Image (cartoon, rainbow, N blue to C red; front, side, top):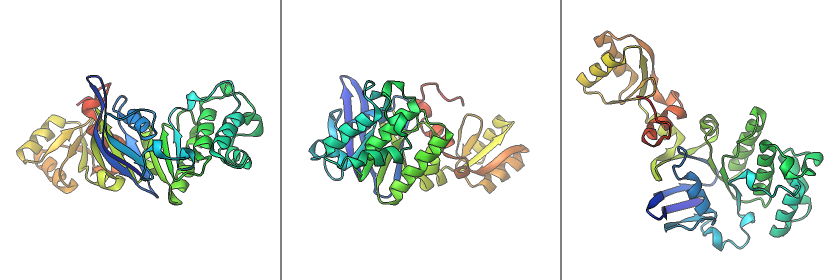
Length: 298
């Protein structure tokens, strides 16, 4: 389990992470989402002891990372696949980790096979690896000690569709066997497919958290029309709350209520459905609209 409690990290006058609290539980995949610069990577670096917190704390398996006697046996970490030693071979990198953790030598071949790196590929220097191969090597290193917890930042970067499907199945199987997975990714569809729980961060603060089903079910109704101004006025007149999205409205009412309002206003609808069917992307964009670097058009 991962427990983050009132975590704050400041750099001078800038607050990168602001009073963040959440729990990632065993047997579940927790998606950690937010725009670029929202504080995800900083939070994960604090969790694994690479960055000191200004206040608050993060625990893995009920202990701070620095207090774990042999961290690789309890938590597998992949924060930056490009940070591997470019002059060593994939096998050498895994062998060093295996010896550091005090594991049997055969564990290296087990992991290479598990992440589908061939003997030829594992004998190449990492500088000659594609990004996808580096990701596989990074995942192999994270899994080497058979830990109970995985903390992964953008593990699908550089993977082709087959590789993404492989990673999804691997992480799902890991959680189903009782492991804890904290997964940060900008590939929202992949998070939507695999995650059980979601934590959404913006400007260093948690803007939403809960089970995926709860967050998507609470999203109201998604409605699209070519006459947004008229429908908006009709919703205001009916005292129905709504918020604009990129090309639609999210309405805090059931679809049948929205349909009746539109009918009375004489507005033709091109789409009307419960917003939980709209998917994670729409929810994410709405929750983080104020923190998006590129901005979201109303």
